[in-house]
Length: 194
Ligand code: M6P
Ligand code: ZN
Image (cartoon, rainbow, N blue to C red):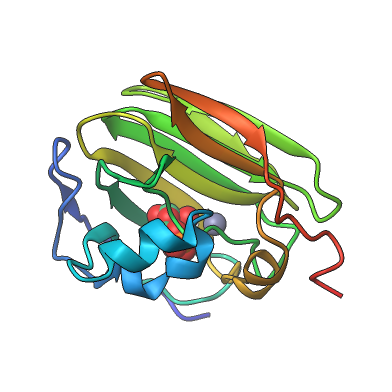
């Protein structure tokens, strides 16, 4: 048995910044432009290529006895009417869960099974969302401030982005009359994952 030493990471609860930062990943619009519904709006915004979100992953072995943990910061903004959001993913080990604890801001957590069933939970400071095994997950900032949350999941869960890249999510979250509105995604392709 390899005995791993306990350690602390410090989280700024307002900004989500971790110290030490671990693996810090930043995603700009150019990294995910085809994920937004309004391709024309995305293309126009590419000139400025805004930062959509970033996350800080504590460095943990990718083994099942361990727990990966991270903070994410989704910036406020929209592409056309669609709010800034994460790419979203299934876990590579699909039968592994995740917990999100919202620290600041407000948003929605969109989840989906492989056959397109969708569920949405609200995120606000203090909300603890349980993402059960087999649900893909994407977070969406529906507010005017950064949406900040802490996540924890099984050490070896990994990320499967390919299924969502091919199928899309079955729902879109758009702003209509100043309010978030959940609609069916006309481009959703349940067979795209075959
Ligand atoms: C959360 C966790 C991470 C994930 C990150 C960004 O912090 O779920 O595992 O990597 O959000 O989301 P995505 O990987 O979909 O870009
Ligand atoms: Zn996950």
